[in-house]
Amino acid sequence: MIPEFCQEKRIVGLVFFFTRSDMLTIKNRTLATPLLLAPMAGLTHSALRTLLLSCGGVGLLSTEMLSARRLPMENSKISPYLVRTEDENPLSYQLLVTDSKEIAPALEALHKFSADFVDLNFGCPAPRVRKAGGGISLMSYPVRVREIIRTARRGTNLPLSARIRLGERLDEAWLRDFCLMLQDEGLDMLTVHARLRGESFCRKPRWGWVGKVKQWLKIPVVANGGIFSVEDAARCLAESRADGLMLGRAAAQRPWLFAEIAREIYNIDVPNTGINLPRLYAQFALGLTRFRPERRLGRLKEFTHYFALNYPFGHHLAMGVQKSTTPVGAWQQAVDFFSTTDPDGLNMVETQAVAAALAG
Ligand SMILES: Cc1cc2nc3c(=O)[nH]c(=O)nc-3n(C[C@H](O)[C@H](O)[C@H](O)COP(=O)(O)O)c2cc1C
Image 1 (cartoon, protein in one colour):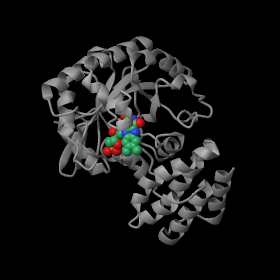
Image 2 (spheres, rainbow, N blue to C red; image 1 turned 180 degrees about the vertical axis):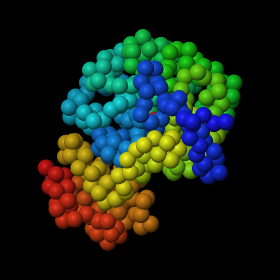
Image 3 (cartoon, helix red, strand yellow; image 1 turned 60 degrees about the horizontal axis):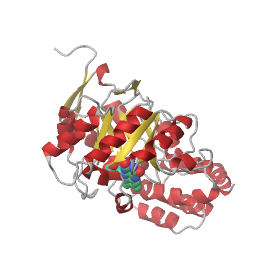
Image 4 (spheres, protein in one colour; image 1 turned 90 degrees about the vertical axis):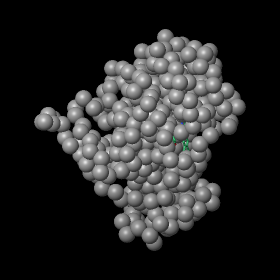
């Protein structure tokens, strides 16, 4: 007999029963949905975050990775990594750490910026980051990781999380010890990007391995990697039984996906705002005006790379924006593309308003 408050859901042949107790609580914070934005350099800034909020369904926002060493010197009013509107919460700030000595000043800065959550990056495989001794390179030095978490735990009462990949190679005993160590040192939540260090995004993520981590730990475990649809989310949950899902590239490609997953899998009542691609793009472009003019074009190009995938001929949009030398030029390229390909296109007033804002 299924309790009344349990709702049955069938997605891609999988059956889910979600109850109120499925809400994700990290330390003392319960998220509105168990759907988290992945930190992404060049993408998860204020413009994308406010776009996601307007689409709904996202339970925890994130910054891109922030150098713990440089953070105390940043001006949060103008730094594109730190600019934040009052609507952007809860917001997790991700620290890229190479040494535990960097932690205390970085946490002091985060407390000043009113961070809601603190996340530690032990998963980034970028050569530049590994060379500096950060990201996934730290997973090879558990003693240093232990010291980093211990210092961070002593330095903040905020919910503290970390992100890892599965390691250098599949080694269950090693991974189990590593994850238990993170938990023992006081971590409140762990996100697992279900790939090994050297595995590219083309490879199918190993969601079953997130399930192993979930069984070992008492703290919430969140699955990340390769979720681009409600069906992917359902499969990932079925394989991992994770406490939450973290979406990366799909956030830029399909900003409405959080809302769809919240509604269709978790039975959470998120209003359906409809999908009008040119309007979403315009909204993102307007968000960029929170940054100084020279900081806008690169971010528009980065976002367009993913957003253009919504169109069969999206490479024309991506290429047009890519070759532009000013934000207004890039916007004009996008307007031309939308006017020929998307019947929901923008009207003249909207088009000119965005151009004027980007030029300002
Ligand atoms: C452009 C880009 C930038 C990224 N930057 C970060 C980062 O700053 N910190 C981090 O922990 N992971 C970073 N990642 C990894 C993502 O957070 C995520 O783990 C990865 O994209 C897989 O999730 P997805 O398949 O949902 O995109 C980045 C990924 C991309 C594509």
